[in-house]
Length: 160
Image 1 (cartoon, rainbow, N blue to C red):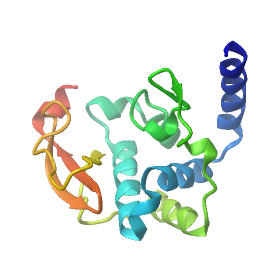
Image 2: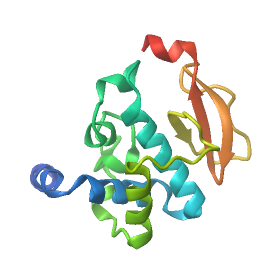
Image 3: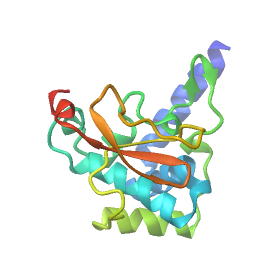
Image 4: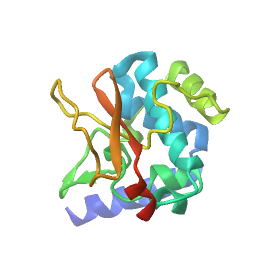
């Protein structure tokens, strides 16, 4: 088992450095929202870029797209292991299509889905209802798109 983790660490580390930001973004979009259609993927891409553009609070410490994607515990798809078990649903196992690249380019070029606004979080509750606040009251529910609930920052966020 040790060799599996060592090999995974070495491959992932090397792969992270050779992937362009565009490819990385297309992969995370596919992994996080590939089943949500064009609007759902644009919504997730908007949140990711909102985090890149955020200058205050927690996300103010992650100034690049790569920093945001690999920030600890932010995206399950950026982790090769969850809870001590391999995570097969990760960005390294994605094969993005032209649609994923187009959405990544759109978002990197300043495109934003208006319905998402300045949301910094999204969450799939696996139920028809969205929590009214998330996470730890630093975000408040703003909209639901497909299976994801979106949350905008409250004043509490700026203390993180």
